[in-house]
Image 1 (cartoon, rainbow, N blue to C red):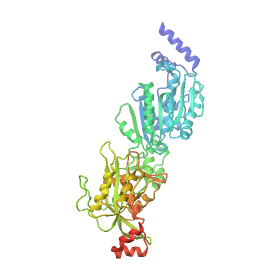
Image 2 (image 1 turned 30 degrees about the vertical axis):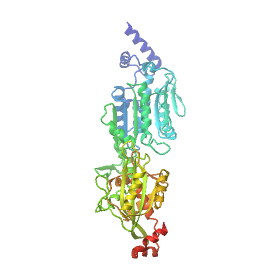
Image 3 (image 1 turned 180 degrees about the vertical axis):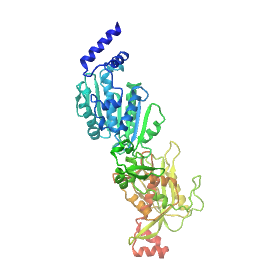
Image 4 (image 1 turned 135 degrees about the vertical axis):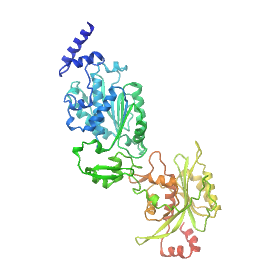
Length: 546
């Protein structure tokens, strides 16, 4: 009797509230799932294709439908709670996230009482949140797409959505869809059940440092605290560089059963019939990509950027300071022996001569590492009718403090004194910042010319370093930290050379500082003759210059 009553109640409600034809299958579903007042769409593909829901199937690539189906089935079967999409730009990942967001709202609206079902109070709405990189991107890219989908959907219109600039409210069920950006703390205080971090690799603070991981953790903790068993956190982005947030998250998630992690090149997602049937080969080192000719011009213009943005293969840096960073390998003097032994001690044969040396010291931001380089003028080359100085790096070091300790400045000074004891004539020592004021004064008291040189203020020192490399005026033995750092240097807004998050450039800074000082040599006829013909007068002239 109770079953018959329940069936009649359901049938009456469905006939009153639903314009679609009622079928026995739906009644059976509702009898088994009394928490629902109507059966939610069980398929991503149907949700996209059916005009009652979105009705845009003809415009959606098949790969998007396939991936969306896998994600949605994993969500409703409670097999996955997170997704990571490391896809190329223009691959439709943002659209996929928009549909997933709408599908989640749809699911919540189909519940009889969403707050009661999830055992939370009705003070705040249950929220689906889409985060963008900036307020403009969040509003004009993500939110515009979602708003259009909801405005054109008969299903959603039945719930009389209140559409505002950055949110859509369904007051009947106290459900809301928000768009936010990486500069906000919007997830805090909301009952977030589904969150999307769009272009997460590009979440930066005012100093251009990644804050993606902090936002991800904040969002996840907020979601899990409210909905520990049923939620979805979707992180999507093209990569920025090796070991950025999205790349690390993807690699970590690949073997986690509760995370659906995928990586696709742009042309692997787009429908083949909508691209050129002709292909070109693109060499990425360990493999050759077969790429539709549609991408030929952009690949030719900037291969590294194409590989990163469209191929979803992260590069070492965001915008390389030196696009031909392998020059550091080509111009290395592999015949030279390192002057430092395996225990970090200077070898006995490292001795000075009468030629002046220049030292630059760069202390790491955390004071737990230090770059040290010493070099000398190594003659001149004639380039485009001009004399250009060459540099010879005698010594380059990365000095690291003991764990949980800082670099001891006095030990750096002792290294300088020991080089003097070995016969090196120290013409100038420079440090990178104000924290070295004490060392500068002590060195001056010992008769050593010492001053501050910041290679971060502009790109002059690094431009000099790079030019010397590319014009074969740089002589240095192989030193792994130097090579590693140089290959990962990036140019920030064309004004500053920096390292990617988690990287360093202390050693490169030190070498760039030495190159800068060497480049200051005057190159008049008389000075050139003095250097090449009468080295006994070289030092007096040098003392006048510095």
